[in-house]
Image 1 (tube, rainbow, N blue to C red):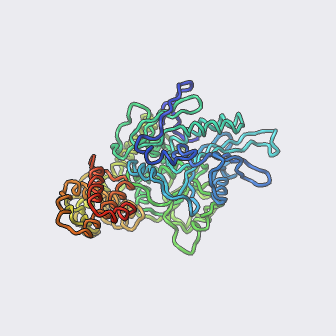
Image 2: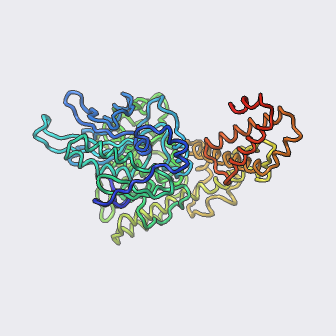
Image 3: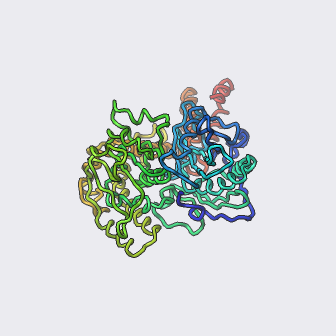
Length: 580
């Protein structure tokens, strides 16, 4: 079962008065109120809820989808079916929780404004996915003589674009057992109707979410929250990396944590072979979280099966393995992934004294048979030296019976500081590429951000490199050079460049607002004035579409200028300007 129940996510109080909040504030109502369709509030949290069962003739099959009019392609339905059941090798009896991630079919609806606004304010690790769904599974397999096969086998799956692993794992943990016992569709309908009353997730806000006679109080994290900061006293929804018990996930590989951090940072192809979907999904999620607050921009699949639609794409031997972290449980994959450069084989946790037995780094050539022993199979040589102080501190914690939560906090703090030491020089250099504010003038197009030069950046490391904040020795320069070739650098650079470009646009609007636009028009021809109005209208439309953050009153003042100047032009131009 997944860790991080309701106690980690928020306050769950049966019998409490359900608090129902308006899901849109005034500004969103203005944009969406008139055209909001059925299940609009539900869809800001979930895409759908599926019940997957085992059919003797069909195998895994979707028994129920809610809302009933949700549009899932046959390919998506098939993927959800196979990913919602542990494979037969896992031997999962009782209740099992895990998660998966699947690629959406091509041609789905375009990006929604509300999602764009949410992503602007959310931490990078909690932003919505444009091309993938997340699945949060609660699977039950128990003996049942009333069933021909002798077993009750069913999964309840929450499908969402949001990576709220802790919240949705807690949610399905509450809903699934009741649904399995009642076995009634109205139970699921009632839950979905309640979710359709929830406020939309707004970063930085604390929400009250009614569910099955109780209220879940949650706080959606914001990108302005301090990374690694202390938890607020009130119940909170935290980023998924905060929900996982990192110490538990990494117990067998603690001594190789430095290597794993580098592999994830560099976007190296990595396979995790685990004994169950729970261990598989939690380990993969823990791995992609270890570079937080940097977003992991490669593909990842917490639970992956041979039936997955991308199976051939990921296992072809005609080209290099893609940048993806895969979690698998089927021993068949041992032979399939022999050409992959990095494989972590996990077994059942075995204790060696006070410490779980640590797996060893082994040659890939030894990854051959189905009974291959646990280990990290790779030829990778780390760029940085191992942090022996961290290992000693964790070992001392085990000897002193330090709680797993405290051990995880130590791990998380160490990984956060390591990633920040790596990323701060990049952020500092990127900021130096931003044009000076005084170079933004009303009568010229905003200046361009200077191009990123790897060599120029490298020249800054001697004086402002990671050695200022990290005691780790090693080849930091080599690590940066390889990072520049990874999808994680590309994703980070694109995100920062977009933020800086939007900042320049905001500054340009503000200087335009402060300029004497009326005085400028007195000396200009009609053609020049019309050109200015059209450009201003385009800039204002773009600013509203992208929800640019500008000073209060700027957009309204520019709207007023456009209206006033348009009114002073000949009548035949009014129609042209008002339709553009």
